[in-house]
Every structure is written in structure tokens, then in C-alpha cells.
Amino acid sequence: MPSQVSMPSQVSMPSQVSMPSQVSMPSQVSMPSQPSAAPTPGTPTMTEIVSAPRCTTRTQSAGLALEEVFPGSTAGDFGDLDEVRPGPDAAEPALCPGELPESAWCDQSVPWTGLPFATFVVAAGATTAQRQDLGSYPTGSPVDENGNIEGARSLHYERLNVRRGDPRGLLPYLRAAFAKCADARPAVVAGRTALVGHVTSLQGYAVPTEVVLITGSTSAVWVQLAGDGWDALSRDRAARAVLAFGDR
Image (cartoon, rainbow, N blue to C red):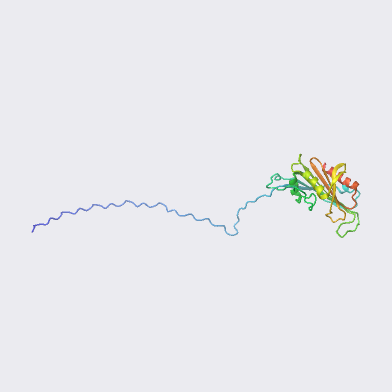
């Protein structure tokens, strides 16, 4: 048997177990931002206000006096002069649309465009437009079944001025429309070449309404003479008064 079993004198052990000096931690923990609160009912919100197009401007003033059209009239009435001019946006078709029809609509009222007056002014390319109504009637006259005073006469006139060259073609449109819808024929009225025709009275008068168109190079005037008692002399007086007023 061996006298001794040799054993190692020492078992070597590591003197230290190395540990990390620090464990790195994030300095901040990011948190998701809070969602914005939805508006509660009744909370006011911002709404863009779009201004309306300024297609025309309108003024009213004193026009023809009753005595200028119906001298010696004992009773009558007259409205203010209604004047319309193109507004700042009139030249923008997208904002202020309007075109003259290719052909007159004879079931409409004079001038047979079917357009409201302000839209017609823009469509015609007018620089100014005027219109007025006047009427005269005998004192104490009875009223007929249509509500018209017997012996009453009324005048409606419109005047439009256009640019030189009439770029929108108002003047040829009017001449064709009066010929088509009023069977207007050439005549001399107040010393001017005119077209004179007749249409059914819109006021319910039994007699047709006489319509007169007078055009120049940059203007158009038409008068509507409704009721009884109009003759060549009174027609010329009314047309002359309207023409003179527009030239003031």
C-alpha cells in the first residue's frame, strides 16, 4: 500500500468577483403627451366669413318730375329714379355671372332677357343704368275691374350707357328683340330715329302698351307707354323729356 496519498496543499480561489460599478438607468422616462381635448358642445369655433360679391351699386334720387311728362296733370304719382352702376367685382365672371340671351324671350317683360335688373346691367356691360315709373290719371275717375283708374296713363323708361364699341352687344340685341317681340318698325320719335311697336299691357289695360326704342352709338333708351290717351304728340313729349333728362 502506498504510505501516503498526496493532496494539493491549497485550492486557489479567485480573490474577488468583479461587479459592475454602476447599472445605467435612463435619466427620464418619456411619457406620451396628452391628447387635446375635443371641443365641447357650445364651444365657439372660428368661421371664415366670405363677403358677397360687389357686382353692382344702387342709388335712388329724384328723377323726372310729373309735370315734365304729363303737363297740366291734376293727379298722378311717380317713383324715385333707380340708378345702377357696375360694382368693383362686375368684371369678374366667376363672381358676377350674366350674359345676354342669344335670342329674346318674348314671354318675358321688356327687354325680354329674363334677367333681374342688376344682373342685366352686368350682362349688358353697362356703365350706368337708370329707370323710373310715372303715372297720371284724371281726378275722380272710376276704377275698373282690374283696379286701373279709367283714363290713366303710365310711363316706364330705362336708359343704359355702354362703352364705346358696345363690347357685350347690347344695342344689336335690343334692336332684334324689339323687332321680334313687339313687331317694332322704324319711325321718328322726338326727332330721333326709333323702333316703335306694341306689347300686351302688363297692368291689365285693354289697349296694348306702346314701346319705343331709341339707340345711339353708346346708349339705349326705351319707353313703355301704357293706358289710354297716348297720341303722337304726348309720346314725343315723353320721349323728349326722357332723352333730355339722361343728358343732364
